[in-house]
Image (cartoon, rainbow, N blue to C red; front, side):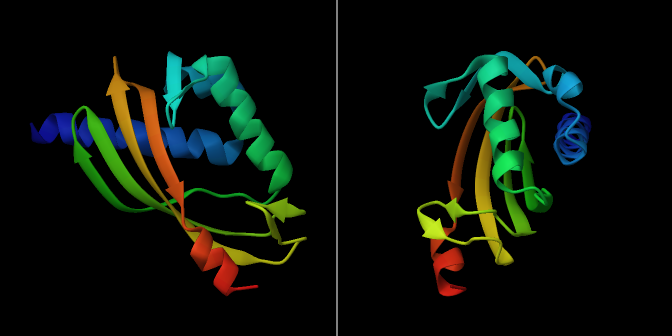
Length: 130
C-alpha cells in the first residue's frame, strides 16, 4: 500500500510540475480523457481550456502543494497560491494586486490519471486582503 501511495503522490507532483511549466502537450499524461471538475464533464480538452484560462487570468500562477494526503485512488491537497490576477477574480476587483490564498482539492485517479476533481478556493482569504 505504501508503494501505491508513493507512486500516486509522485504522479501528482509531476502533474503540478506540468501545470507550472504550462506544458499543455503533456497534460494528457496526467488527466483522463473523461475528466470531471466539480461535477462538470470537461474531458481533457475542456480541462486544458480551463487551465489555460486560469493562466491567462493569472500570468504568475504557480501551484504549490501543501498538506498532501494520499489514499489511493484519491489524493487530497491544500494548494497555496501567491499571485496577482489581472482583473476581476472570483467577482473581486484584484486588478494586479498580489494576493495569497488556498485551494482545497480532492482528486480521484483512474488508470493513474485524474478523472475527477472537487475543489474549493478560499475566497474569504482573498477578500480579507483587499
